[in-house]
Image (tube, rainbow, N blue to C red; front, side, top):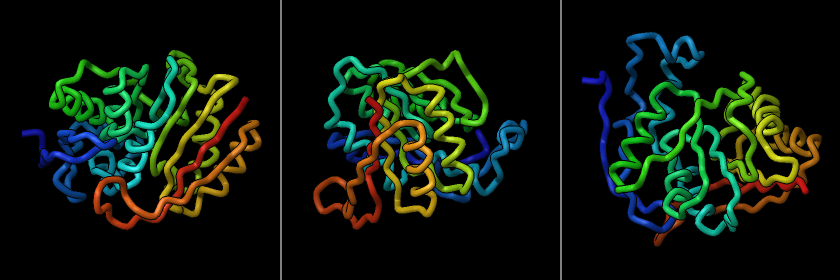
Length: 218
């Protein structure tokens, strides 16, 4: 037994029925070797990677309409990787990334459950330089601004891994750190546009309060 409970359900992700394996609930925790603790992941934060978050569904729906045109794509803080799976279905050159020790395992299982070929995954610790990760034309993420220090750390990570001409798309559930992140991105030469989102994608979508942030650097 892995020490945590999971569930498997079929969700509409990016307009397509998708089998998703996730943690059963927010009460799950298992870190027998102390891997998460060494990465600074507390027991309260441990299960967050393995849950289906509303912002992730919004991002997965949005990437279905993005022009790919051979662009290299990185999903940051991917968690269950719903946006990466949606892009992978479109044969995009996408790499998923996160810092949780179990993310790669859950991502691989969800890709397998949906009959897809393996999806590239890389460790994505925003505070640690990783030149081997490379640079990308498009970087996407959802609900990645929940801590006060994340605007500075994430924008610096983006600067290290975005091409000189790049697009960044972030879905944010109106967290208070959004304005600081936008200021950091503007200082790096990105212009910004915002689109308010009021409902989750799909027929009869539940209410949602957030924004789709688009940053462009030409």
